[in-house]
Image (cartoon, rainbow, N blue to C red):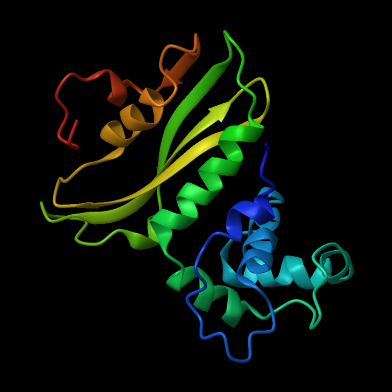
Length: 188
C-alpha cells in the first residue's frame, strides 16, 4: 500500500507543546515541501509562498487558522527530529519514484553555504545534502543530510549508502568524480 506524504509525516513527533497548536506538524511539512518544489526556500520564502496560496492550502489541508508565519516554520523545522524527517520523506519518495530497469539516477551533494565554519583551516565544518534524482521520472528518490566536522564521514560515503539500497535493480548512476575514489578524505 502506498502511503501519502501526509501519512508519512503523520508518523513524526511534533517538537512543540501540544497546548495551543494551530497547525499540525504534517500540515506544516507538506506546505514546506510544496514551497520547495515551487522554488521557494527559507522560512520567509516558504511563509510568503504559503500566504500567496493561502486559499488553496486552507482548502486542501483543512487549515482552521490559515497559514502560519515564518516564525512557526522556523521553530518547527529547527526542532523536528531530522533523521525521522528524512526517513519519512525517503519512505514517501521511494515508493512514488517507481524505478524501472535501466533508469538513470544522478547522485549529487550540495553544501549549505550558510553553514560553513572555519573555512581556512583543517577544522572546517559544514552541512550538506546528498540526493538521488531519477531522470526518467523527474523525482528525487532519496535524500540524506550530513554535517562534516573535521574530515568525518562525508558525501562519498553517504552516496554509497544511498546507492547500496538500490543495488541489483539494473539502474544507471551518474555522479561526480569524487565518487570514483577508492579511499577519499571524506570517510569513503
